[in-house]
Image (cartoon, rainbow, N blue to C red; front, side, top):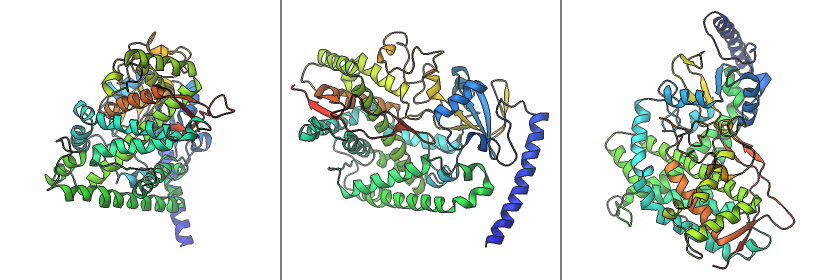
Amino acid sequence: MDLLLLEKTLIGLFFAVTVATIVSKLRGRKFKLPPGPIPVPIFGNWLQVGDDLNHRNLTDYAKRLGDIFLLRMGQRNLVVVSSPELAKEVLHTQGVEFGSRTRNVVFDIFTGKGQDMVFTVYGEHWRKMRRIMTVPFFTNKVVQQYRHGWEAEIAAVVDDVRSNPAAATEGIVLRRRLQLMMYNNMYRIMFDRRFEREDDPLFVKLKSLNGERSRLAQSFEYNYGDFIPILRPLLKGYLKICKEVKEKRFQLFKDYFVDERKKLGSTKPVDNDGLKCAIDHILEAQQKGEISEDNVLYIVENINVAAIETTLWSVEWGIAELVNHPQIQKRLRDEIDAVVGPGVQITEPDTHKLPYLQAVIKETLRLRMAIPLLVPHMNLHEAKLGGYDIPAESKILVNAWWLANNPATWRNPEEFRPERFLEEESKVEANGNDFRYLPFGVGRRSCPGIILALPILGVTLGRLVQNFEMLPPPGQERIDTSEKGGQFSLHILKHSTIVLKPRSL
């Protein structure tokens, strides 16, 4: 077996060198490629830049190479754009040309090579999946139907924290309770289900499998095998684990949620308010032959990852910044008391009457963008961008974090200062009306979850601020806001302990 592997490796090496040589000649003769470091055969720029292609490292390259640059990562072309003008080209003006998604060896496993919505190529399958998912998940009707449930979930969090003596003294890791809240928010929509406790065995198992999926997919550890096919045999063990996690998750989704809902189909087709939950709509599409059973499970997969964890990261970042900026926390509390009334619990409609709360949310999403590079785009065919030729099937990254943190276009961007969205940036919204600020992207492949994330953020942060004074633990002046970046994500490195002193309402 070792000799066979060696033989295949040498053949692959010869093939890779040949391809690299041809590409190098094409580069000089035919293409006007974006600037970038000079690649070497086989490895391209991988040995120069390494695996960790996070938003800050790519920002450093943009400062040296310009608003558009090309990295040759093994056999993959990676194009990074870092200006509002180029972002508009990729996401809007040429949204069709750059509307597909790249995949990699790990995401091929977790998405069935693009059988989901988020990571599929631009085309008929994506349009069908987007249409099927929009009605049950991404409309104002859904927000109004489920906002009472969201309000009940955060009310339960407040009650649990108030009843925990440790919260007001040494502090608690609030994220753990908020994670249960976020799962309940989305599982109410998906399955008309919720989990009663953090130690619910099914919730513990679900949370564990989803966490392992995120760790495996977001890690930079597997990049070498994705970039350089001849090294892929070295990923055999890693990919085996990915397949096992994927199979366990899908079996859990099917056995405990999808099939359970099917059984209720004849006796309880609608929820208590007379409207179908999301999976009912999706199963109807399956029954009509529009999608397969696998597609149903990939939709559940997308919501578990793209809706729950990203919103939770943003909530956690918002809390951390409010703890570290007590004067901002006080101003927000004063606004809520003045507008809603002392002791009156904030509801989703109230959030639209609270401009400083909206500014705090916008500033959290600006400085601590959950998906700082957006989900990567791809051009299926050769294209033009910024006056340069972009080879077919290039991975296009929009550094949305840098667009929103570039001192050339934002005043003191390193500061957490919500006032900027009431003053000089008062017209900037999270929906992509300004290409300097794209926390949810914009255009055809923008994140439709914006319609759920913003009200959940508003109600959650609002209720916490009006019910508690949030402080660092005893002996600390601040909590740690070190970042941990992944293939797409940006979340807080340490889930901090915070003190929550109840307010007398």
